[in-house]
Image (cartoon, rainbow, N blue to C red):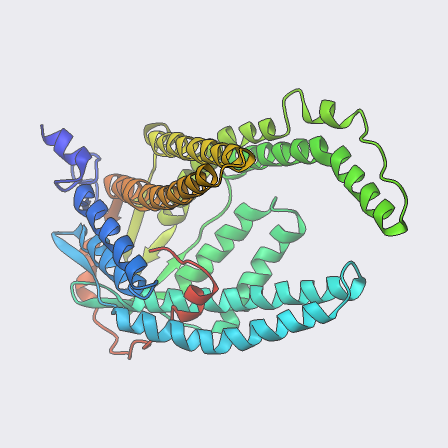
Length: 424
């Protein structure tokens, strides 16, 4: 009975290990109550045209933070929804004119020209810099609003140094099409640990990518094979579309459809190559388990050290259940679109309108389902797993840590929120 309650999230899930094997972390998430909160947040966000989402995010964070306890003391999230709202509005004041300027410049340059390409690349680079700056301020805000035993965490360093360091370490990954990502992630983890503090004590880390290359390169290879197979299947169709466009511009008759288009898209099928993404996702999950185990174990908070060993085999049910749910949701969406197409082709306005309503309902259901799966399932299960297998050594040294007394930033997530959904 106790184990069943623990799996349901209704009682604390302690870290498992040998006797006296470090301080354990308790994770106590009532999944049913969390799902109720997520659904309530969704309804209120829709009714307020998106304004309530700042309060929604704050409420979910408070619920999740307070579900984690160390030595019987829960974490606390001290952020306020008003801070998120004001930061978002201030970010919009900056972003809207900037996006308008880039849009006008892009519209004024002739398409399919070198100038247009340069403008688009410049826009991409600019918003990449803006994204890194947004991550810096969002991370600083989130840490400053996280406390344990009344002591707050925080972040030091300037955003220019943050951006420069990330560019320096991630550029090799970009230039190698992602092959150097384990090295980049290890370097970035060490840097981020070095600028993170808890009270008067600074974190540090010495993570290395050794042991990560095998699973990562396997996952990378599967994704690359899926992409190459998909592109090669559609390549004859792409060439034919270019020939059609050239014929239309020249006023010539359209070329006949080549015989090799359908065979190229047949066989395994162009979309069948995406089946390779399923094992790729499982291998990448194993990579992430190993990566975070190594990175957390390499981290220290003064005299306090951490040990984490996430057993992939025992946690594979998390991505498997997620993939099954996603497959069901996508299947429902495909069936709904097929019904919508049939309703439109029928020529009956009533049937077409009914099919349209079905599409709207299914799209909404897909959005709700993805939200519930990502938070109430994936996030909660990973929190439990970390709590179950994390060890904290020499936790008594925390008695020497006090609050810094440094004023917390008033805002920080606005830019990240304006650029896109930052989740929890």
